[in-house]
Image 1 (cartoon, rainbow, N blue to C red):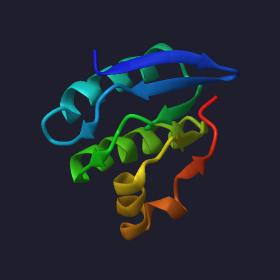
Image 2: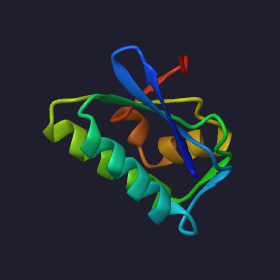
Image 3: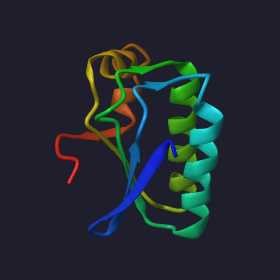
Amino acid sequence: MKIAVKSAGDRKKIILMVDKFDVANMQDIKKSIEKELKSDKSDILIDLSLVKFIDSSGLSVIIAVFKQLTKLKKKLELCGVQKQPKELLEITQLHKIFTIVNSCK
């Protein structure tokens, strides 16, 4: 499994269990996250603590989740953002759109 799901207070925590979130695994991760979104309409915290590399395919999944949650008037937060993913979020200016929190609890 490429994700783990836990309850984190009033939101659902989705932990990406991969070191690379890229074109090679984005479809599997997207399907798993979409399944969670359908089963529960909670706010979502995506834990990127294990992700050392993300490409545009990985970002597209996060953007899709953000859009789905926005339609439902729910929030998306990211935590555990490592160096390369953080740099990519800054280059693309997505760090201004996504809520990035320090704690993954």
